[in-house]
Image 1 (tube, rainbow, N blue to C red):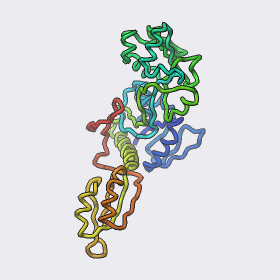
Image 2 (image 1 turned 45 degrees about the horizontal axis):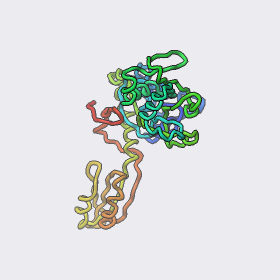
Image 3 (image 1 turned 135 degrees about the vertical axis):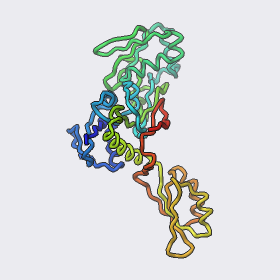
Image 4 (image 1 turned 90 degrees about the vertical axis):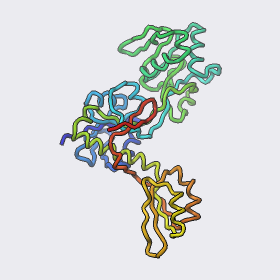
Length: 336
């Protein structure tokens, strides 16, 4: 059997990615200087890459599957299959300006201010495609500049015809660019503290991003690789779902059993087992974590001996195929 090549991200996504893989049941052996960790599945080959590169390498077939950020998938516009929203490393891509600009509170305000003053608006970002698309979709930009592309500048090339709005490629430390090197930035934030420390304020959210699992479309057509990819997807989805569930066990008398079952949500249907004492039953089921406090009063009044576990994984094996696409921040079902 041919190995499945899995790309995992370095940088701020690395640590939560290792934790997610371990929660899914994988054991990873990794030395900090190495880019090729060992894994306890002999049919998976791991390589650590920058999250910016992973969508392209997966699209080109150099990696079969990969974990990256939704932001970098949108930025690279890579043709891949999105398998799963992993729901960690949630960040926002925002437009930020100096906090002293009290009259600028939206992208439209920013564009109109610089157009009225006949000054070039300079933006610094790592996200050139997302930024250019977002600017062109802004009503104020369309009103002032029509369909003209903003100028995009990197050390290797320059394109676009609208010299009034310029986007410059940032190689990091983007928040340090204003005011000398940029008037505004488009960058990711988690808490906003970095912006605040650099006297910047967010004025608009461009998109939200989380870690996602992606696959090469041709790899999914390879029967052997497809099965192993399904295995990885099943375990990771189980880890994602496990964080949202609680496994509860309760003892209940026969007289209260029916009422308890009516108030108890179950993953499929609860398991009911008779106890050694006649007239008593054990009920165990998996519920949504968010509903636990809602049903706790019923459990207290109808049952005894409540035990609560946090499951590491919840595996719905009849739904283990590829079933999710992410589009504009949403997931929707798709037949495998």
